[in-house]
Length: 239
Image (cartoon, rainbow, N blue to C red):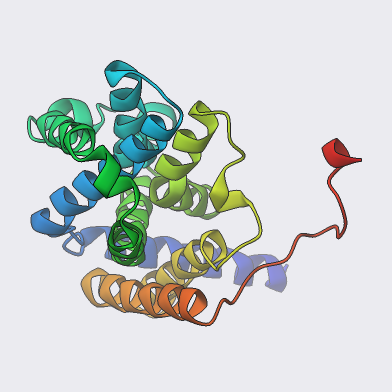
């Protein structure tokens, strides 16, 4: 009986902490970072579509999914609300501009190592920022904490996953490589621990997690820190 009472008290304290977090001002992605991230992710998606020899419409669809796919998954599947790509009049013209730019300078852009470097930097900042936005929205929707983490991760990496699936590739985010999805999972959990467990403001916790993920991501690229497959050797398809 005392253990049951203690569990109930802990649950009540958690709910109070969750309510206190919801009453705090929401972390907002700076609009310049938002638009720059959408533009550059659209450029990366357009390059992938171009390499697959798609026509303009096909390249545009790949670019849309690459740049806004995480939010499409978050809002269309989990939260069931209108995605920003449909409600914000800026996104679609911005993506069309990115596709047109890639089409106009396709030979130069496809061979520019600078594009990959810039996209890596934007990934390092934008992915955790949008993951945290997904965490906040799913908390507001009353989703249990494990589901909150799922929504946050999907919001952060969903665009790249949808892009790769659409063009018939295994998602790069799910293959062994430099630290990416595992880093997103880590910062999502830490954000919830800091805000719900220790009462840290969402703004401070969000920027702290962005800095942490950016540092991990850049160091993993610089020093080639790589994840390993769970099962070593050739895949079943290769045998």
